Image (cartoon, rainbow, N blue to C red; front, side, top):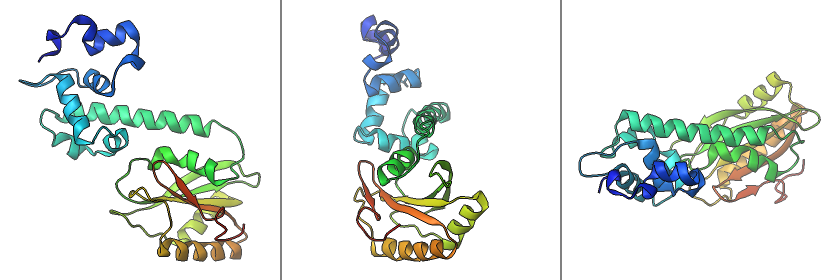
Length: 228
């Protein structure tokens, strides 16, 4: 069925004009971005097929690469670029809201909220460092490593050097578990111990090591794996 075969009030763009973007389903919003379908398939049907491929998960949709999107029949480089641009704007919107909140970063929940927009939906592990000043205000963050699959390692020296170069008083380290289980591995525990000892030598405070999944997190500090 073509979009034009729908009643005007059922067409995604007309529905958006009449009722606003919140009234549209995820499939209808994607159809607006796609603008057109292909022979034998409307933009809405294409959007619903793509959502079916990711089991309706926007996190998984956001994690698709340009190459993965272009492998979907009917989605060429133009549609893929449009979708990736929309996803990136959404991430930046989320980050802008978090970073505009000028409160001291003092607990794992605040670290989780700060970093989730960068880590949500990834299919591989990444390790990040958050830098804080003497009043525990956010100075910035860096991605230290990006692994393949369900593992990544980090260089303790690189974390400490980054903190010293930034003039940071404290750091929080964060990495994600794409499996959805935030509980730390044995390697996570060993690396955290090494990092805590290195921070002590350079008079840096380690706020926490937070392991992130899409809907939960694990805090080394709150689980008393070490004391600040």
